[in-house]
Image 1 (cartoon, helix red, strand yellow):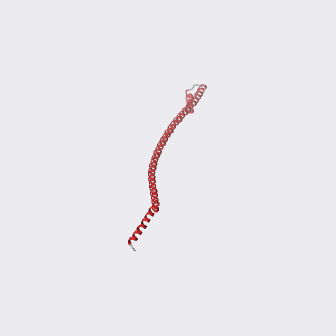
Image 2 (spheres, rainbow, N blue to C red):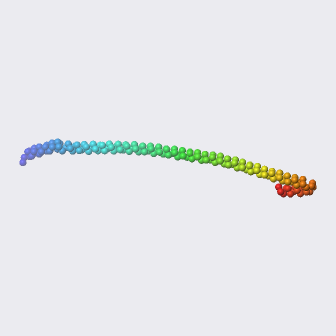
Image 3 (cartoon, rainbow, N blue to C red):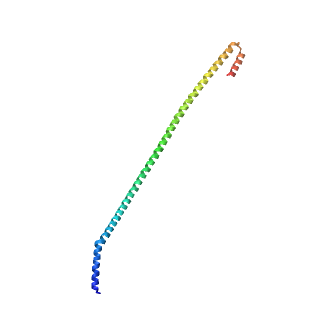
Length: 156
C-alpha cells in the first residue's frame, strides 16, 4: 500500500469529518454550552440580587427592631410617668379625704362637747335651783347650810 494514497484518503476523510462536525455537531454543542453559560450567569446574577436583597432585608429588620425597641422604651417611660402621676393623684385625694374626715371629726367632737356642756349647765342649774329651793324652805341656820352645801357637792 501506498502511504501517500492512504494519507491522502485519511486527510479527505478527516476533512469530511471536520466539515460534518463543524456543520452538524458543533453548533448544537456550542448552543447548549452558550445556553448553559447563560443560565449560570443568570443564576449568579440572581444569587447576587438575592444576596443584596438579603442584606437590605437584614438592614430593614435591624431598623425595625431598633424602632420597636425605641417605641417600647418610650411606652415603658410613659407608663412609668402615668403610674407616678396616678400615685400622686391618689396621695392628693387621700390627703384631701383625710383632711375632710379630720374636719368632720373635729366638728363632731365640738358638737358633742357643746352638748355635754349644755347638759352639764342644765344639771348645774337644776341643782342650783334645787339647792336654793332647799335653802329657802328651811330655816336660816349656818350649820344646816353647810350640811346642805356638802350634800350638793356630793351630788355634783
